[in-house]
Image 1 (cartoon, helix red, strand yellow):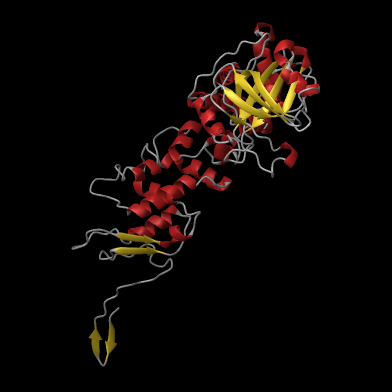
Image 2 (cartoon, rainbow, N blue to C red; image 1 turned 45 degrees about the vertical axis):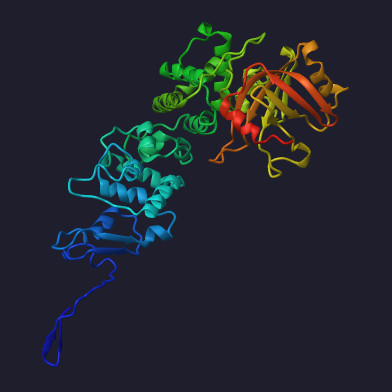
Length: 452
């Protein structure tokens, strides 16, 4: 600012000006060519107002340099929201805009990011999956201002690159939309149960045939005539019963249980939406398996333990199996199920259950029994003689106990296997030969566990 000295007015040039709020708007200094951010703000309006102080055109001003120290010092900084505000309304995600160097900016505009800054921002957006509920609701609220795509679970998840698991950690989709004012409020009947089924069961398993069955039922509002169902479909209804209701009881029949799922139309539509997304994401071919009895599971699909126990008759409508062991046997169908974790840790298992389980090839699997098994007695002997006795051994394998979202991982159904070699005593080391080769992705993960 000009000031007097000895009766004269001296012109002073201001090179730097640090302010808090007072120059957010209403001031026009076109020559500003650098903006330094040191103050965080959640308001996109305030952010754009502050940035706008440097966006005026002036002679000999080629560009505006923005130095944002807030984003560098705060890992929770919302880069995605800030760049979305700059880019405006498009049908591509902010992440894609940054990767492609902002192709949809207005004519004559450009945003140039240094290589390191670009990598840092993309990594920040990639990691921005720890949204709290209010942040997620706010994104739903502002979605219509950022894209012309209709608001749906698929569009929202794809647009913001937010995994379904992240969304459902904060609540069911329809309730989040209602709280964001995007749909009318709705009845809470079945809400807790259906939310839990989606979050804890369906987002963890992966089976085109099972998902298609649920989708078909949902499109009929779960109002089905059990007389028209075959045995496999009735078993899938039992799987569905325990997906939603968790415990036995509460209904006089399985048919009544399934009908009850359809009492909330809004949540039935959410089930339809989530099933269509999950089916569309499946990128492998599940296979049929030939067994001397009826069961609905398909080879190479993923299932939760409760779904598997229901499918093989270990849980019934009246009694739910409490099995949480590494093996489960149904003597009525002379079948034993092996539940195998490839990666184990002492935090999840006691020292007596830290077994050595790994793939030796796509058809050979090394498995170590529980410490009590011996080849001349009891369960160990039943493995040695299983071919002669007609006992069926089925393998269910998962990479680890919990996934990257800290949810329980489901098991890949590898099918039936025959013992071709065994050694050791309390525990036994058994080599199983699979009838069908395991899927490549699991073979690759399992081979890493091989020792010796």
